[in-house]
Length: 294
Image (tube, rainbow, N blue to C red; front, side):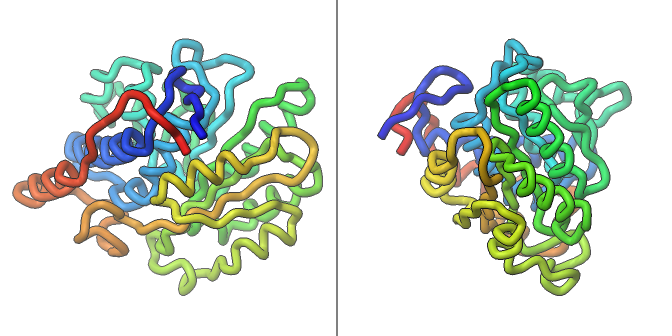
C-alpha cells in the first residue's frame, strides 16, 4: 500500500525516513558542539519516531504554522528538542541558518522548546511530566471546537513515574479522547539510572489499558513497525485514547553511547567528535524523494 505524506504532498520511502533519522542524529551532534553540551542519547532513541511523525504522519503546514486544523505535537520529553529543531528547519518552518546560533544569547532555540518564539512548536516544555496533561486539554479543545485533528504526545519512560501523567491518563480515558495519541520512548534509562530501578513503570501496556486506553507495543527503531502503528490508529472521535509504546535503545546509532548512563548530557570534542560523525555518516542510507510507504 502506498500513502502520501501529508507534510509535503509526496510519497516517502522508509529509506528516506532512515536518512532523515540519521540527519537528526548528525544535527544533534553539530548543535551540541555549538552549545557546548547537549542531550545526545535521549534524542538518538527518538530519531526514527521524529522522522516518521514529521515526514510521514503529522498533518501540518510549514507555511502556515498556526493552521487551526493541523495535528498537534507535544514533546513532553522536551530535552530532546535538539533533534526536533533541525526537522522543523528542514521542512521550512524557519530559516535553517538560525540554528547556527543554537543556544547563543538572543537565539530562540534553547535546551527546551519555546512555543512563543519557534514556529511549529505547540508546547513549551520544562519540568518533565506535564506534556500528557497539555495534550488532554488540546484534545478536549478540539472536541469543543468540532475539529478532527489528532494530538500526539511523545513522552520519556522516566517521566511515567510522575503522578500527573496518570491523572492525565485517567482523564483521557474518562472523556474518550480517541484523537489523543501518546507515544512512550521506552529506552529504559533516565538521568538517574535504569527506570525499573529508580521507579518501575512496567507493565506499561496493562497500566494504560486499565485507564481505558488502546495500546500497541512496537520496535521504536523499525520504521515499518512505526508507520504500521500510525496506520492502525482509529479515526479521531469519541472512543479510547491511543498509546504506542516504542521500545528503543538510548544512544542508538553510536556504539559507545548505546545504553550508557554517561551520555544523557555530554559534549564530544576532538577526535571523539570526528569519530562519532564518521560513524553516523557511515550508517546513512541514500535519500529517496518519493516512493512507497508500506
